[in-house]
Image (cartoon, rainbow, N blue to C red; front, side):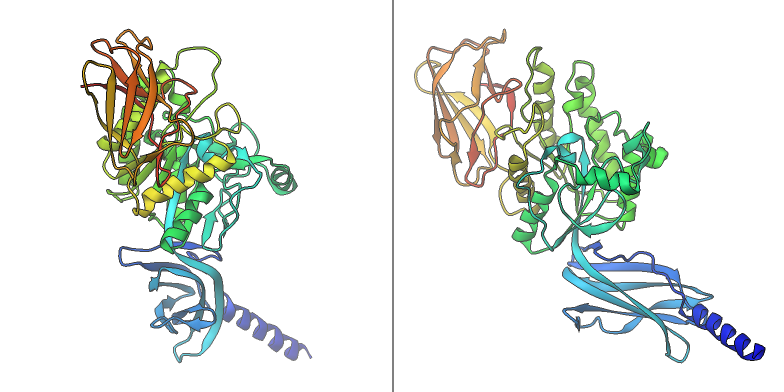
Length: 475
């Protein structure tokens, strides 16, 4: 009896050793970045059954193996360790990826599978609260099967609002000074949330519909943060810094992405911080591209929108907006979208319904199928005297339009006064004509969207908005 029990026990141990395997680099619902040919490569490692000599894999779509991706050898297994690569997986999905470990004679020792795998484009979401999302969680963008997220707890899953979750994030910067929410406390936090809609999910769903390519999102934003807090100089702090946390998450999603979406600047709109904003922004973009080893990485960002302020000068706010406008021509492969025409859900945060529009505008940039939207090319006086100004636009999709009376332009004297006023704004194809009530004085400058809370509503036929601009000379 003792011999029989020993034999059974030893056999069980041997079976367990033969069946033990782990997989690193492949998770249910994961999105892999495609290359320039539209193909994904998946690097895999892990533990293998001791007797295993090779790992094999295949890729299935709707229970059928893809052409050229049926069972094939992916790599070697030795001493209980293995590594391999699954190459040339076409953009698309969802896929089921099956793996099996075989001995020297080709006998299967163990097998496993991962589900709902996508190959497409990965996007980093970074910045402060308007990227984190503070929109009302009412009538939000619904989930899309081709859009997944690497959530802030480092779990791949279907993307759904809210994308950002600060109190239970893995990286310690997000809950500094407080304990990280776990278990029942984290569940209660999510259950009771009423705010958190952002632009990331609308961006992704619009992009999928336009291109047919799946999207993966990696939320990294944190409300109220300044450019100083996003400094690349803090990278060595790892997850205790915003930049270090973003680098860690970039590596965790595969070390290669399609681009970065950025919305930040509110915390730098002060007389003390605004003068450093431009240099800090350029340094940030340069560092991200270097640390990601992607020198041409697309970087798309949102210009500051409206804010409700009761007192104080809007000079620093408008300064950040115009610096952001200028960055578009100063930073290679960067693009700006404007939200000055959009509604708010509180005094400073873009509303949930307007975030859908903002996401669409960013998707238009990323998809590359529309022009960036109206940009002021020049402003000139025309006719007799200085009582009519024609503002010529470039990169207009179709023609300029506005819901209701076109608004947003003003002319300022060198001293900053609103003189002269204009009594009519006429949209004329790809240009705007301002009719003034008196001749403009020498040195008069043009603005669009000046102030904290302007009413500015000019867009083109693809709903790409005219950015806040000024002061600009009038020729």
